[in-house]
Amino acid sequence: MKKSIKLLLVILFIFPCQIIAQHTDLPKNPKPGICYERNFNLNEKYQWKEIDCDKAKKQDKVLTEDVKIKAEKYSNKIKKYQTELQNAGYKVNVNGELDKITIASHHKYLKEKEKYFEGQITYEIEYAPYNNDFSAERIKALIGSRMVLTFKKGNYKKEYFSPDGELLQERFLILKDKKSYQRTSTSDTIYWIDITKYASKTAFAVLKDSMFLNHPCTIVETESIVTIDGFNREPQKVGGIFKYAKDLSINPKWYKNYKEGSFNNIVKSAPGIAIQSINKGVYWEQTITMISITRRKVLKSELNIDLKDVPLKKL
Image (cartoon, rainbow, N blue to C red):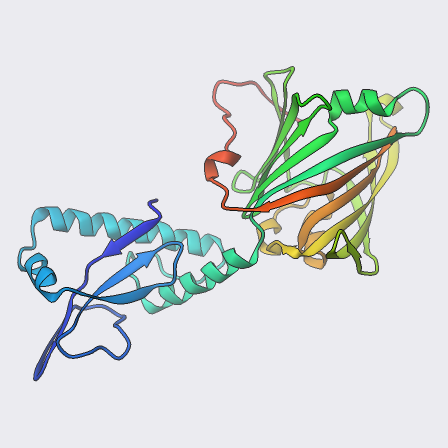
């Protein structure tokens, strides 16, 4: 969908008669003898602006077939956007019209997008092995010493890099698929999990709020039971402590179906981006800490993962 959708609707206020383009919404306090153009931009508040009446009259005289086709395309784009609003939880009708409910929902949606974090965060990763079978430097070379999170509307890409800058693995969360994907630099296979399933039993507790890296944080402690092949599939207890930044907020509604790890419930208590994660695993403790943050618009293409003609395997 193009970022800007413009439709010229002319309103001529000529006393004593009025020629009004039929629509459910009109300019506030229109001036007699003034023409208006309605601008609808997906990234801006809906508004009318004054335009040259002579230009508007010329465009209004001939309703060509081309104009009709453009009007139909415009209506279809509005329908597509109304569907997007519905998916975001707004009660709008998919009718292809910029009615008052659609406009009001659009304005609320803009505020919501401004409110929630979008951008990129870089983290450093440290490891504390429980025994001498593993070394921290070796783990960094195999799993990663730096992670880059690219985040937009709940979807994300996590890129893990070795100390020398080699990309080791990528993880994608695609909410519309209800799946999390993982691929490594050494394999063509893409692994995935169904986020709507409880693969592990997770309990959590919300601890006392605190400041961390100058961000107000909600602290959450988790405990999960997992099964691992190296332990003859005997249940193992793992845990974590997560610092979720309140000023890097996210929408809990995005994760209503994310039941793996009870994240759909955790995010209700801590609706923010984790700026530090301490994962107490089976073999080592991993600490992921934010070192830089960039707020910016993220392109959808940045979060795409190509699933065509590649082997897929469920974890």
